[in-house]
Image 1 (cartoon, rainbow, N blue to C red):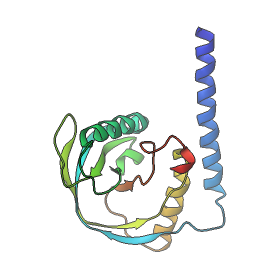
Image 2: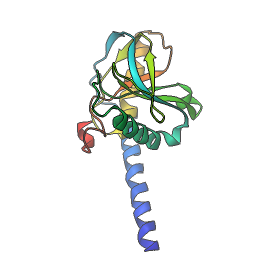
Image 3: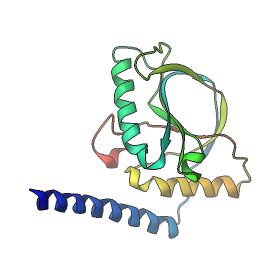
Length: 175
């Protein structure tokens, strides 16, 4: 059992490494087509959210726990949009920072770690990432290239909306 468990961990690590290598190759040699980017004004929105100061290495586990807790808290309540996240730039540049996982709703409540909040109105450069989270760096790289190439100002945290994600389906290609 000990050797089998070790083998399973190594295989899992190998799968993650292969996905990371694949994403890095695409980032270094991106496909010729450009990622569609839209400039969008987003109004302030009322959300139920979970906030945390987390390390970059904890993002996946923290995200999964926060989505599950938000889903349970909002069960039976009207929601006005998909799950989303707001991530301080320091989470990516300093390896730790503040993050918020949220769900828009006109009926936010406080329960457990969930708190009502208002996300401020903002101007965004928006694109849609299709596929597994392992490929997300490629979409971020292309969006960043668009922002720099069009001399757009970058201010504030990264904001994401999860149109289809792990809370909706286990099929990563559908995310």
